[in-house]
Length: 364
Image (cartoon, rainbow, N blue to C red; front, top):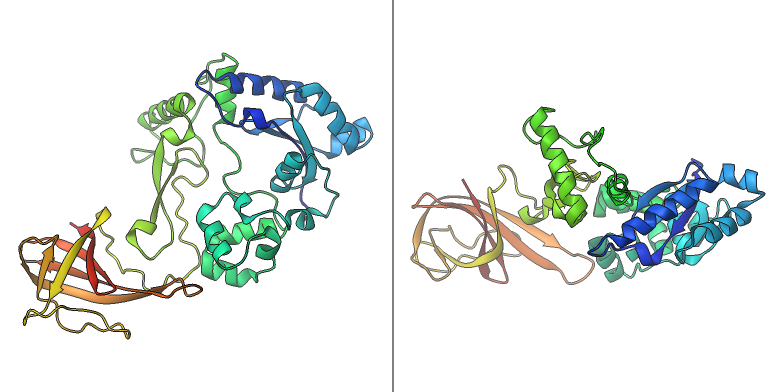
């Protein structure tokens, strides 16, 4: 698939908005000046806007002339670059380069995997010795999808030059923020984004009012001021949900990925995941400590539980264990989990690692 060739204007001094909002007002002028040369200029996020390269290049006599005119017109210490696809074009602008058509993949190859804006993926890849986009692109696609999930597979396609845009590279609130900076009423004609589900069970007037209220909060306090939950892949209950900005493409979309997640807990899911696990002890009828062997078997039947050194509670029902082996590429980490109900009616998710039990979560 041929990627769209784009010109990107990157203003390093306008990337972060200060308390007075001066950067947004200055960026309004950048977009306006770019629009005077090309009516298709559109903002991507604060300090970054893009426009198609083909039409302006024909009109002005080449991409070099387009870049030169934009640098002169917009000011603001702007960097301008051209490449195939939005991700590569942004990096080209940062480097003030024109990347020739079809050369996006070799251009991206020496860049760090951190440019994907996926910190957890970057750390994992770096631990594996994969530090550049070129090394990441060289990995087999099925292995990336199976081991790291759907989002990493999408990043892999970008690194290979097969697709041109990362999820999350666009700030969906930027148009509204710029209307505010221009002194316009941001609510005129405003509707909740089409990808955003209703808050109260449908597309009611209450949903619309809530959406507009959340947008106003984000305009004043930033995109991270309103967060909603998203279901995603993972083995731990704490990994299977993430908070993402309201209005972002990820909001309300389950991203469980294609990985099998061996050791993942069966339903039902816990109702409360503890931010800080609580130390616990589990013993059998004889008072001996219960552990889990390397084969994933319990050393005895769980009979009593003590949490944080508190009173012992009889275990009336339990299920498991579910062994989990993680980080096979570095130091092997073995854990196992059980579900246990005590005589006081409390159901808990317990995990053990290196002979120590922990309470991870609670069930209703």
